[in-house]
Structures are given as structure tokens and as C-alpha cells.
Length: 85
Image 1 (cartoon, rainbow, N blue to C red):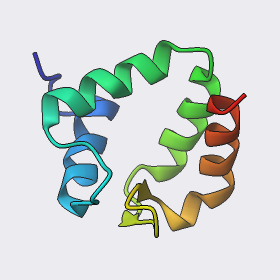
Image 2: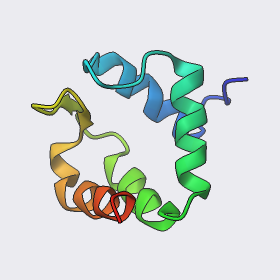
Image 3: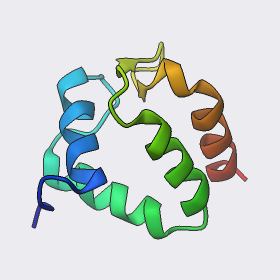
Image 4: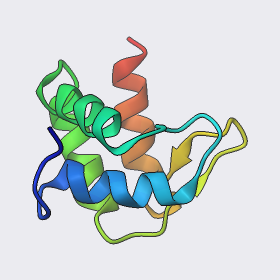
């Protein structure tokens, strides 16, 4: 079940889906489920830092078709590096 408005994952997924990145999430429910898993996963603190930075910032698609927030490049890089460990 999708989260209520005001939830970081709900609001972030609306913005992420609006970017229509080729390798981004395809639906709101799946996006929110992934988001909540990332919040509670081993890189949760890095994800929270990235989420806080990204809130209200412009989203675009990377050359790889992934959603990205240029204004939070350092935070996103730190989060992705944690995931890739």
C-alpha cells in the first residue's frame, strides 16, 4: 500500500517517476517499497543524508538512465558507494 503524502518515500517517488528515467522505477508502489527497504538497509544513514539533501531539488536522468540529483552529487555518490561495498 502506498504511503501517505508527506512521507519522504511517497513524495520522493512522485518526483522520481516524473523524471521518467529509462532505468528508474516504473510505478509508485514499487518505488516506495524500494525506498523503504533502502531506509532500513545497511546504508540507511547514507540514504537518509541523500534524501534530506534531495528534498525539493531538481531530479534528472544520468547517462545510465538512473534518477540523479545534481545538487546532491556528493551525497548520492557516498550512498551508491555504500551500496556497492
